[in-house]
Image (cartoon, rainbow, N blue to C red; front, top):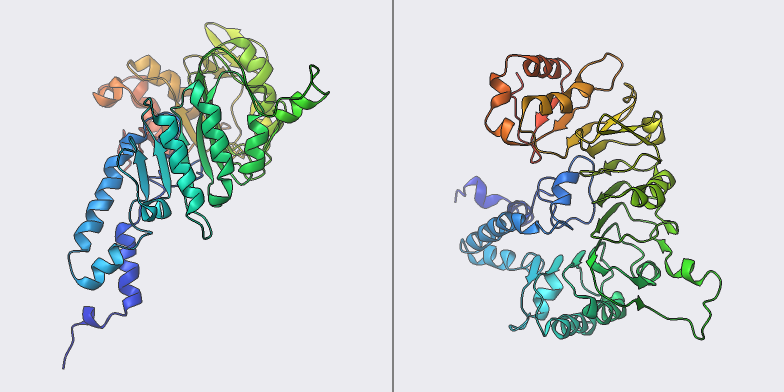
Length: 425
C-alpha cells in the first residue's frame, strides 16, 4: 500500500523538525542565553540588567503558543510537545501564592523574580529551599535574576542562595540587586558560582548600615582581610554589567581573565572613571571585545582631555584594546584623537544619544566614514526622531554625501534592533 513521503519520515527527523519549531533564535532573542558575542551584544543587553526584559516576553509567548498548537495535531506530537524540558523555560515569578510545581522548576532555564512584597523574602527563600530538595543532578537553570531586592532582604536571601549552589550546577548567568555597602560578596560569588559567564550587579539599593559576611572576630581586621573579601575571581566570566546609582565597588581585586564584554552605567563623575573604571579596563584591555561606555560624561584625566565641550580620548586608545569589535559611546560627549587603522578588528560603532538634528547625524558618522586609512566599520547603529521621520533621506547636503560614502565602504546604518535606515543596493 502506497504511503505519502511525509508518512515515511523517521520519527527522529520529525522530532528534530518539531524541536526547531519550538526553539528560539538565540542571536536575535538571547533571553535564555548566558553569554553573548559582539554581534548580538545589544540584544543580549536588553534581556538583563536594564529591566527591559519584558520586551522579549511576547517572543517567548509566541513560541509557547506555537508549541501548544503543535500538541493538538496528534497523540505523538502532544507527547513530544509536553516534554518537561520544552515547557516553562522562562519562569517569571511575580507572586508565590500559587505553588510552582517541581516539574516547572526542573524545566526552567531562566528564573526571574520581579515584584517585592511583605512576604517576598520568605517566598524567595522557600522556592530556593525547594530547589535543594529536588535531588538528582540538580536543576538545569542557566539564568537567575534577583534584581529587585531591598537592603534588608539581600543578605538573608543570598545566604540561602549560596547554600543551594550545589542544586544549580548549570547556573551561568546571575543578576543581583546589591546594596551600596557590603563586604565579602565577591569572595562568596567566586566560591559558590565560579563558572558564571555573565554577571550583572545593580548597585542601586541605597540604605543605612553595612552588610558584612563572615565579620572578623575581635576589634582589629587582619591585614589583607578586606582585599580577600572583595576579591572576585571568575575564570569563565565573559560579560560584566555594572549599574550604579551612587556607589561602585573597588575593582582592584577583580580578576576576570576571559572578560570580553563590559558595560558600566552611569559612570558620571570624574573619580569613578579615574580611580575605578579606567584602571580596571587597562587590566583587561587585551581581551575586551565590547566596550559599552553608555552616555559617559567623564573627567579630564585617565586617557581623556577636555576640549570644546567634549572629552578627547588621548592617542593610543585603539592599540590599548587590540581585540575590540564593538564600541558604544556618545559622539556628543566624546571624540577620539585618532581612529583605528584598517587592520584593527573593530566592526560595530553604536551611538548612545538620539539623533534629532542633521548635524548630530553628521557628527556621529563623519569620523567613521571619511579617510582612507581609518577603519570603516561594518555597522553603525543610531536611532532618533531624525531617522524615524526619514529626514536623512531628504537632506541633500552633507548627510547624503556621508550616506553615499557609507555605501561605497559597505557600512550598514541600522537601528539598535538591526533594521536598516538606508536600503543597500
